[in-house]
Amino acid sequence: MKIDKSDAARDGYSVILNEVKDLGRIDATSEIPLRQLTDRNDNVTLTLYIKGAISLTLLCLLPFILIACSREIQTVNCLANGGFEKLDGKGKGNPMCWFRAWRPDLATNLTMEIDQTCAHSGTNSARISCAGLKELVCNNWEQEIHDFPKGVRLHLTGWIKTQDVQKDDVVICVQCWDQDDQLIGFGTTQKNYIFEGTKDWTQVHADVFVPKDTKIIYVRLVLAGKGMAWFDDVSLSPEKK
Image 1 (cartoon, rainbow, N blue to C red):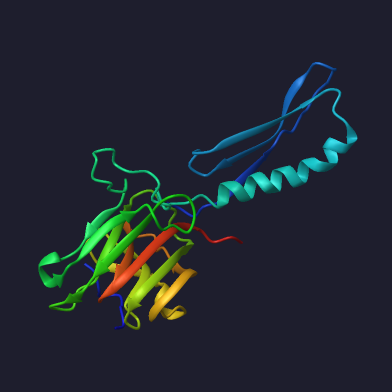
Image 2: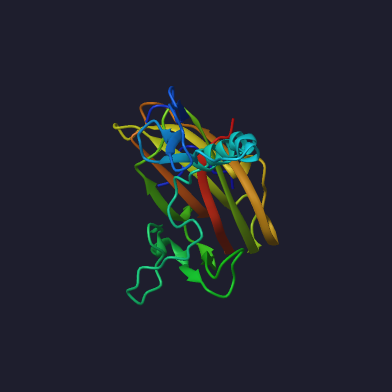
């Protein structure tokens, strides 16, 4: 079954490097800021310091250190608990930040649980199991995202494992909605990854451009038929340039 845009139920992101214009006099005990990395919304700030007696070798390595730090900031995951390791602590085993968007009344033996016996990494994965559907419905694990960059392309990735599923019924997708509850951006793994039958852990990817009018983003882990599907290590990050 094809899952399209209708199914379902901040400024661009960049790293700003601020030069220190005047280092002044440096003695053996001085500490002065050499570079500062911060994002446009001042969410992350990292300052590197040098001593007066710094070696030439360290000075040569500083550009590479700065590049590595910059990349780390740029690859922030907009999703929370993408590995399903954090549970609600209420004894029900519900994953924090994720919700069930499902219709048990339209399915046979539908379960959506955390599986602590099967994971791509860590201990847990999110599982959907269904014996059959009475009507067409996309049961899914859903996460709402309110803090995200706008006017940029986001990269969605995750890992999927299946057992006895029908063709095209398993997908990870991302939706951008505006303040009028209109779908204005959409990305899906279904374009390049088709799951049918039983398949071991497979990494999937998709991209979505986030319009500036986007108010909320949903990421959905979908099983739209019968069988079992596991999801793990899901992330949504600004596309690397």
